[in-house]
Image (cartoon, rainbow, N blue to C red; front, side, top):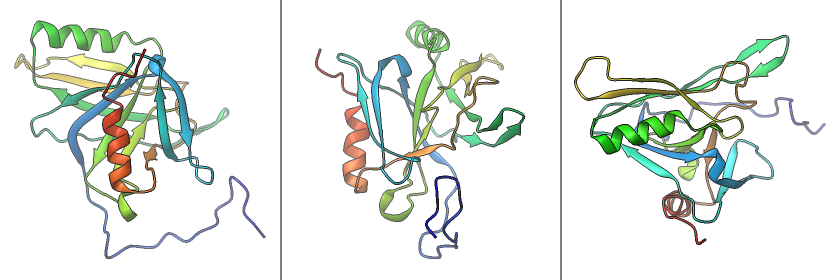
Length: 194
């Protein structure tokens, strides 16, 4: 009997040739949701993003760290309203210039939230797990922005809003191969033609 959308249908086994690795690269790609015109999902797996189309003249932005490990997290909430998945990304920005503070303030004021792409240490099969996508459906919002220790290092936390958590677990960005996917992710950082 074929499985429907919400029925388990496959075994999950350990992969000794491709074991899980912890952590992510110190690079966060941030896409304002207002800048996205379409997200293309895989036809057989809704947790694989195959494309993100930007509005004309828009692009993604990258925040690069200097070795501070990112620690993305997600969980599941089940209540009277159903099942939701809060996404969370704490990270640090090692700069307190006026230009940096302006960008961080603007990030905190993104009304529609943002989508985040992380490059993970774990690659998966053929690179299909290298890029993690957080906030693709409901967006992530700045819930913490602080230089808590006065060292000009801003702690930032992007999270799902309470009551508006994601309807799915974090997705992976993957298009046929690791190389093709990398090109597509890098292309998001270039403004589209107006």
